[in-house]
Image (cartoon, rainbow, N blue to C red; front, side, top):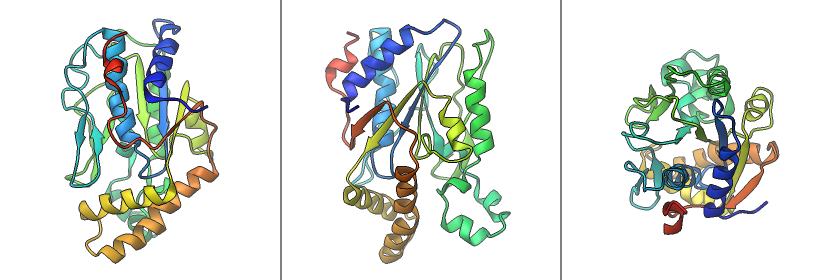
Length: 263
């Protein structure tokens, strides 16, 4: 079912209000590389908090714009106020470069970093199982985030606490219909797929990777984008757990002012 970002926020709030007080609502935001997952997921989390708390979020998601492509991420103060919703990125479960060095074929593992086998699926699944448990009065649940300056995962300074009743998780493989990943996807209450034109997605990823210096040579960057990023996107399209809602190509800030009005 196609849905607008504003309507999606309201649907999530409605689902949340039906929950028992000791449970959390888990929301998956998946999509191919370059679809705008993060630029939907983090502002969506802000919109959810605005709707539930009746005031704009004190620490809204940052929208960074490295020359040509917007990227959203959590504010460093996320989770330190009265937020009900919190956003977590699947990228935090990348294996570190040191861990990739220990793979049977380290060169292939590094080249294909971002493929399903380069993620710590057992750790990710354990995290989902933990936040699925009835809420404890004293719990503080840690989770990893991806530190782009280190090019490796690091433990987030933010913790999931008892106040966090809506967990939005964004990532390429949140709805991957393959062994292990399929079981993880079953933990989500609401599943959202972000669709994008393949040519547009390729251009976005190419610009992002080249500007980030992932590959210095532009031609080599094109080769890697096609061999890794676009191939990963096709794998998910081909093996996709059916989403509840579909949103098409989110790149600019997706929410209207009304989404933050607390209506």
